[in-house]
Image 1: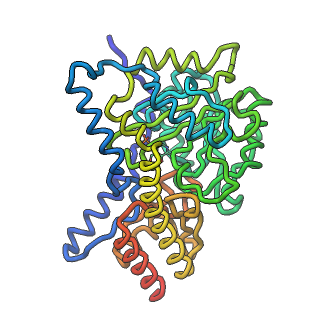
Image 2 (image 1 turned 120 degrees about the vertical axis):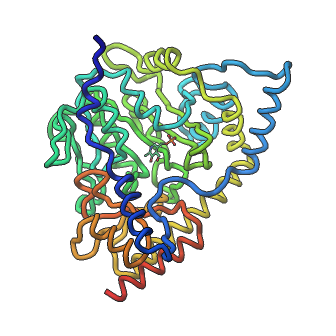
Image 3 (image 1 turned 180 degrees about the vertical axis):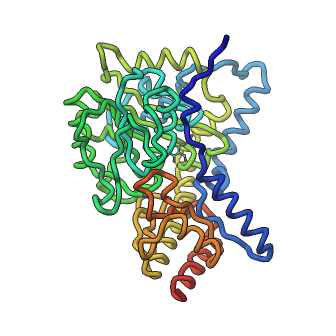
Length: 408
Ligand code: PLP
């Protein structure tokens, strides 16, 4: 008799986006004349850069000719892309990462979830709260999370590190031992970043305790402040304790095209085993590489014209982030993130619950946001707004929120 993985039955329903969709649909049905503005989504809206599109078209032509045809590619990614990544994302910033420490994939979500394959089920996991839910759910599926406590909205075996305005969104070092620590900077959902000193404390903790840091830098391209690290490997000691995830999704509009990469340094060893070798073994067994066409498209991001084009798009989103931040501040709200991130994290007024403020904004401002409570218990009392929308709609949405707040 076959048995299923019982850990799946322990997972609470992923209610956040379906509840938002339901509430939005109910409102639209009751008020069909109202034009709602979506400011909650974490998906990009601008098209791929022309240089990327051109490279993808050329790659399709390669596949159409017998002399340039490509079959299975290397599981770790093509050399042309790994070289470009190592050179432009690391070496040019003075960070020592070799091309063969880079594993190209179909995106950071898969890698964040799959990395658990090479880790013991006994590891204690630490996550920030609020958190990108993939870190938690994938560990729960693997059996590392214990039981889900509905009342606390927490897993019994996961160590939660509150990151709120009270601690300036900097998670405190754990007070009981943890083995694997997920850090995300720039952070989804709070939009805040960790500076070099704050990251150094975590790197030292990980090295001293033989822990591993899973560093998610999916929003790295949005960093504007000079002194904020773009990679954990800018921090001394990180090569022996950290794995880094990167994504072309938000960097270059690849949410639909799908491409990202994971860095596993050769110096990272636990239980006498190289994590690089384990991940390579895992990828060679379970993954057949990202598509040739997409990897050629990703390579084009690193050409001077491709890089300039994606910077233009990032600037478009940055302006949106600025419009949202400044507008909400004018409306008297406390706002975090935005400066180095496409996300704006906003404290609800008068200690209102996340869902209450979400509904107020839906009904009175006709703007859809994301309630912070959906990202973990410490997200209660906040909402997340995204800068990935259309510029005109973003301005209009912010104006509506300002008007609503002024008439309260
Ligand atoms: N990591 C974080 C923090 C994210 O917010 C997201 C997407 O929203 C991802 C990873 C997933 O990226 P990808 O599209 O490369 O799978």
